[in-house]
Length: 195
Image: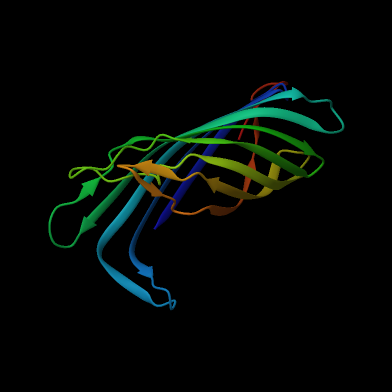
């Protein structure tokens, strides 16, 4: 099961703010041969994210430059068929800070991800890999209906730094994220929109 809800607000073509809520759960996972395996319970994730962009250079026509950030709260929960469940609690997951630019339908960004996930213990699991990272992303945004709607696709590479804990080094590897979506804006006034 997967549920995603997105919302955002833009003001005077200089500032954007977004909010997203997501929930997903699984009862199976795939092994290295591609076969589905029952996990003997349910794993679920609840995410709440907020983000914003401020355009530091934004002419009506031509390239644009921006700075931005994202903050995420997340709860990971394991609920086995036998025994009690364990959770990370609804706690901070990460803070992203980035610099980016766009021209026409293409955009790119580079930034830093500060991992804020909690340390696991006997009563709590992790909600992240607990590794800081460098973010590198490219994307496309194709507007339609005079800019009221859009289709977007983003490809992000997350280059993680290894962490040291109890004199042992860990590196769970890098990530490649591909996200496709669309949206529609509702005008609030001549200079603000929601969507």
